[in-house]
Length: 154
Image (cartoon, rainbow, N blue to C red; front, side, top):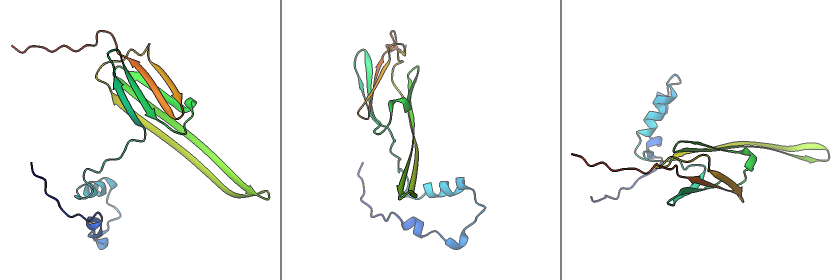
């Protein structure tokens, strides 16, 4: 299939919106649907907050998830069949004082969440997790008897 090169202006569709037709009673679902219909915004995917690599061996899956700046106490991993969920929360508060007076206060709260499926169920009894230098390493052994079988169609 031949692809055609087209010139695009990312904000052209938004610039054509008519500000005099603004309806404050229009619900957000309609606005988002209209925005998703714009050709420049279609297919715009959000990158996951937890980047990871998954490797498969004969006996297990090895997951390496980048989670920099997290404490291992703030990370939870849940396994249910072949579904794996990784989530974490972090909270931080900093204060800066000059001559006893508060000059600046910063608060940060963040949450990361990632859920994915593996081709085979996991033996959750033998699963292990290790966190070091901002990388969460999961060793997820495959459940015995989970080998798929191909059926002949008659």
